[in-house]
Amino acid sequence: MTRPPTYRSRPLLAAALLAALLAGAFPAGSAAAANAAAAGNAATAKAPAKKKAKPRRRARTVFYLPRPTGDLQQDLDQLFSQKLGRLGVWGIAVMDLSTDSLVYQYNSDDKFIPASNTKLFTTAAALEKLGPEYTYRTELYACGPVDSAGVLHGDLLVRGSGDPTIGDVRTLMEWADSLKALGVTAVEGDVIGDEGNFTPERLVSMVPRSSNRLVKRKKRLAWQLSGLSFRDNMVLVTVSGGELGKPLRVTTDPPMAVQVRNLSRTLKGGYYTKAKTYKRRNGTSYTRDVRIYRGGTPSVTFNGEVLKVTGTIGQGGSKRFIFMAKEPESHFARILTAVLRTRDIAVAGSPASLRERDLRPDSTSLLYAHNSAPLSEIIKVINKSSHNLYAETLVKTLGSETAGEGSMEQGAAVSRTVAGEMGLGDLDLADGSGLSRQNEVTPLQVVNLLKFMYDQPYWEIFYNSLAVGGIDGTLGGRFSNPALAGRICAKTGSIGGVSALSGYLTANNGKMFAFSILVNRMNRAKLARRIEDYICQILVEYLS
Image 1 (cartoon, helix red, strand yellow):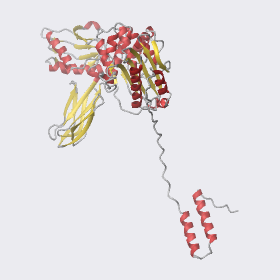
Image 2: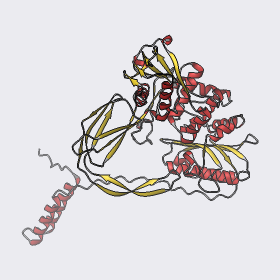
Image 3: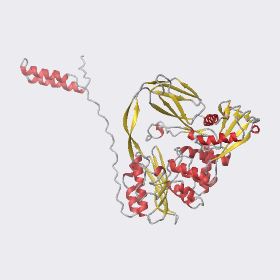
Image 4: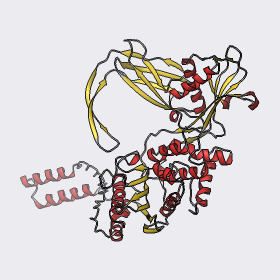
């Protein structure tokens, strides 16, 4: 039994049937039959593969902000009844501080990730537990006797307590001059950094994409948290062209006592001019011509002790590299060593960390102590500039001062305890900066925190630490309209898929209100901020 022919595809089968029909329709040998056969053969030829159609991009939601009618409740209800759910999950609470009554709320009891609004809880707990006059103290100890010639026979120990504000080389010069005034002329041993009772931890702002599909992959800096830090533990390395054929010039900021392996070479180069646009903090932009130098690509690596420079660059060209200190204590010691040598205090040893040494507490004597600016000034950096390292250092300080352990876990526990004492109920706080997605609070809890701070004697200190709309901080480029500028003092918040704005606003009638706007699962950050600003505009104009 003969099997019928098998066709691999439907198009080929259709073409064969067409050829058979054409052949039966015309007599054999006729011109028409020949043409029909040719048509059938052409039809049976393999048709070119169709290009795969690209999937259509989903159209973005067009969102029109409704024109305010003057009725606050109606305007906000109309706003939230639109397609706002497609932009994320929203929660809002607004409280009249003169009557302690809520004038508007929407999902106010639902939990949200607050992002940097967590800093409100951190700074409030610090003011409550430590007081606005609290200062950090960094101490210099002699680990041995100082002879009549001013030589310290032993190590020089610098012990930190968490001060995040040390970042000016002139401060370390003052320390060196104070040692010289005490008669110290040389250090026979090493310069050793000690982070006190802080535990070594890392502040990582990267969130795995698998945990949130809205987070785009980005390379971000990760800080090492320590009780002894200098200028956010960041190092700026600049390489520039030198003499033709010679190694590149290498400078570090801050200056450090490090070993440099320079395997680079300077090429003959030129440059061309290119217009580049820069954006100001207030949202405006400006353009200026910059020189783009040709020739070579340099490479720099830094492991904390050795700075290795390879590659080439043209004469007149330069490139900057930023590194994070892997061990802040030894990093601080390297900077202090370099400064001591520039101030004519010889250091025979090398920089090191106390983790590598074993010093007996009774073998040290205090030489010098440095006090930081008060907490009332430090929290301005945290809330106005949303400084993550400052915030994490402050929450670790809470753990250090109350539990004897400067860890993020102990500090977050103190923040939760203080929040409970404020009457805020149970909330989830895992860090001090808001980078953690384990932080969860409700808009009502944020507003109640703001109300509690409003009733405290140090409220003005807390209020003045917030960014002012249209004037400074992270709100310098928002609320620039003269009708809104200066009326909104708040803390912003933003991580992948999250936007937040909470603080105080002064309505046109002069009354002050506390508000909190939290957005999660948000996929259009600029539009979310635009809606936040629109809500604040309505509140300022129509609250009475």
